[in-house]
Image 1 (cartoon, rainbow, N blue to C red):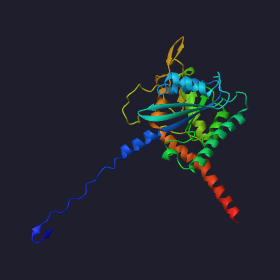
Image 2 (cartoon, one colour):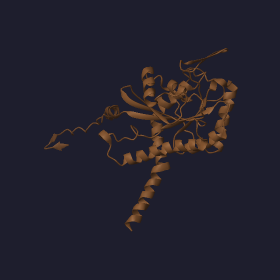
Image 3 (cartoon, one colour):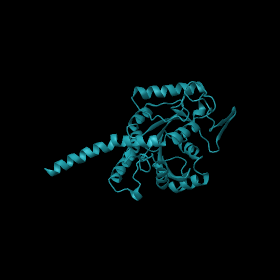
Length: 313
């Protein structure tokens, strides 16, 4: 602009400044941490407890895992006979993480099957109720982000016996999927040939589709359009369901050879671990909040509102 015959330079426009949100969010999450609750459900005698120790072993030191189990169970039983919560507090990449394993009794252990599934659904809905009450209270230490800490069950691993899909399994998964992210798992998959495993996977998925049972799709850390970086897939199918086997020392020894539970060509254990924890924890927590809203919170708010209107008349 020209003022009094002299050209004046325009004031410089403000440049875009970083809000440093990455640093702020990282600081917030490192203070509050995150929790993740995994439920184990299925027939008794499928090695669910052994599998869980194998699943968490890369993150939880062996001595801490044994101590956490000792605290939760007194004494530790060969089989789970009631619902147990095993809590593992760890730090990973600078973030405090609370893993909770909800170890449920297998159906057939000293209770009829109907009361068994009723007890498990009741446990999940009791968590909904506690979360509903907690959501109405002021957050503790300012940690109000529902993706960080809550008391909900985020994933249910439903164990199906190899070679043996029962109608009761489909019925129970149908009841559970309305309340929790359902991930089907084929237990003791080392008792199946590759052809048997592939056929059994197709059968499970076909039955679930026929009964309109939704399963939670874990995110693949290696998308199909990415070049393969690990061992080539063996067989003609891929998870889900996840065909797993587990052992305390990582190997199952047979006359014909050794099954390495961490080898993706032998077991889906490492694949499930990667997809569950490394890529899908936050999406599982986010969908859990949606299920909580659909299965519990929305209806409770409607009932409370109707009750309030009735009392005001």
